[in-house]
Image (cartoon, rainbow, N blue to C red):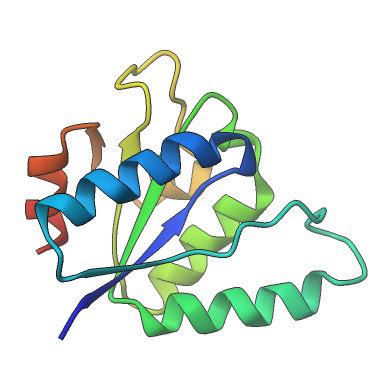
Length: 130
């Protein structure tokens, strides 16, 4: 049975996210990635509906990976997804998309929860997924 992984990221990083997804699948074909790419503002009129759909995907996963790029730390959606993932008791960790501590600033929820953050090394990430 595939391991379900929820990917939390900002839409500006979609190209890198797709590259990450492809590399991870090549290393372990038993991974099933899910996400909910959101360009809608966190406090929009559709936000409650979007949050309910995202929560369903997070609940269906056992692992949440926060893919950290230049502006991820600014995203209310990524912060919220991390909190919900903790509520759902998912394994949570971050991955720096540029492998740079200074460039890839993690969202507040990830650091508040003291979750590990890895550089982009697919083999070690696939091992961390389990």
